[in-house]
Length: 120
Image 1 (spheres, rainbow, N blue to C red):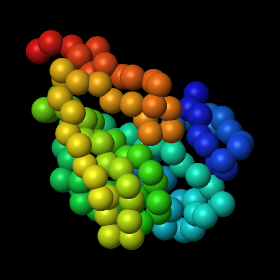
Image 2 (cartoon, rainbow, N blue to C red):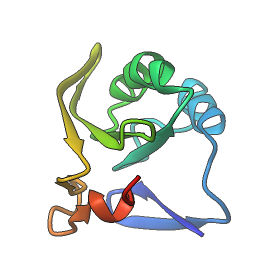
Image 3 (cartoon, rainbow, N blue to C red):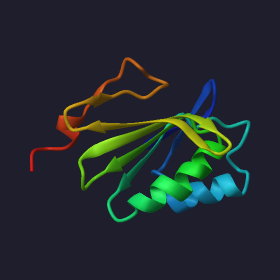
Image 4 (cartoon, rainbow, N blue to C red):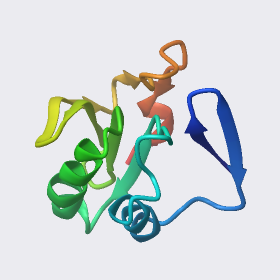
């Protein structure tokens, strides 16, 4: 199960996580727009890292997604993109295995990356 925020005060459960292609298609088709609110998108990237950093980053920023994380599986780090604008994200932070990340919508939730990325 996956939880998706559809509006500031309503939460809907979807039967499975959406694939990137499905989500991108929904944004491009205008299905996800001003009335819906997606608080966080997390991409797990290995072979798609360059695409996620360029194409998807611009698309999600333009759609106003406030928090976009790219999990770099090879480097064992998370890139946190915040403060979207029509041309991209204004802030990008790379957090290594030694750090923690928190969703902007839930700042009290800390994800310890050493638990996400076990030792090699």
